[in-house]
Length: 238
Image (cartoon, rainbow, N blue to C red; front, side, top):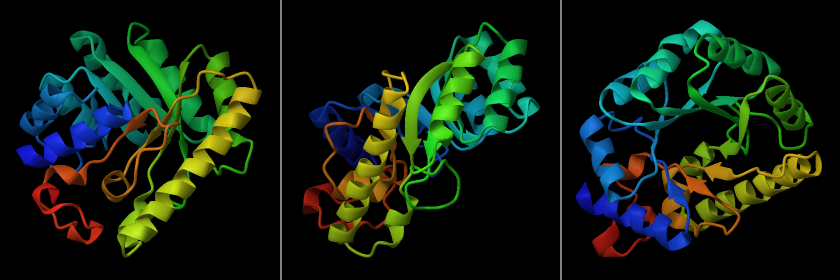
């Protein structure tokens, strides 16, 4: 475990990017605290209930990888974030989500809140299409509601089925291309501050971090699952 945590932090630090590990696999406040001690910027959680547990456990910077569609689903999370002075980043992939987040924030205006736009880079589960104008419309809606825009986030979950390291690298490259294209579209629309956050353990292990990336969010790497097909050096296999 310690070796895995150190290896990923070294890779993030060498690339000059922030590491915001996903806790969906270990769901352990203790492991998250170790990740933060090694240099992680914050954590990524899957559900509001997980976010509540980790805020109560002392984590003060969270990204909720959950497309909010109803304000009540994050009401308690925002309340506790204010109570514990924690930063929150939520995600949206539709205008309904922007409205829900803004309504929840209106009830907790002291919450240090930002919203990132989730991009579908190939998993086809949630997220805006990189080819559409949805991201620009969502960013404009965030600005109209006074909510800080936190850039773009993606999850290349389809990398798990890629089969080998070379194919995973191709997934990572395509993810980067799609994110950069959408970033350029947003910047042309006036959203010049548009950081890119990507996350999956296979791409984080097999591929180099592209210079345009600001943050990586792998999660499974922490525990000793077998990823030896990524041909890492023996001393750094997880």
